Length: 100
Image 1 (cartoon, rainbow, N blue to C red):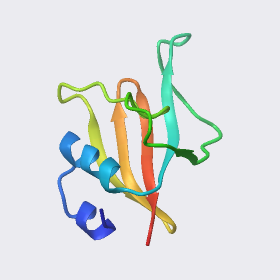
Image 2 (tube, rainbow, N blue to C red; image 1 turned 45 degrees about the vertical axis):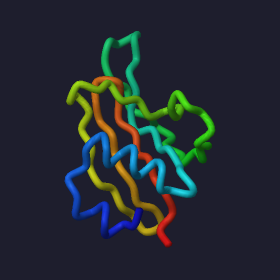
Image 3 (cartoon, rainbow, N blue to C red; image 1 turned 180 degrees about the horizontal axis):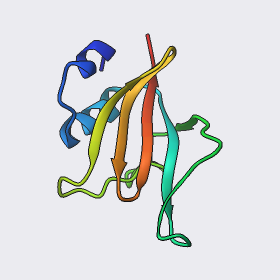
Image 4 (cartoon, rainbow, N blue to C red; image 1 turned 90 degrees about the horizontal axis):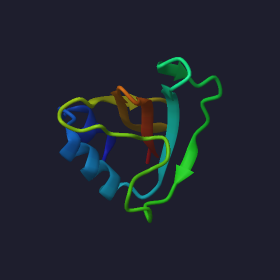
């Protein structure tokens, strides 16, 4: 999926799944995650890009979708990567691919 194609769409769960299928190389950056000790979200101080493999049928470590319309998707782009930011009650993560 190209950056311009993704930028001009309303991002839904179907768009998110399509982005995963069409991307060759995927990276995850975890911005925040649920912490049971404070019963809320805690922000990740060291936000590194972690390469993920598509072989895991269950999902990607760091990206959690809760479903039922409670996931919020936004387009994200920087100098080297573009992708989708997922925000919900479990946290916030960016699923990115390299710009071509």
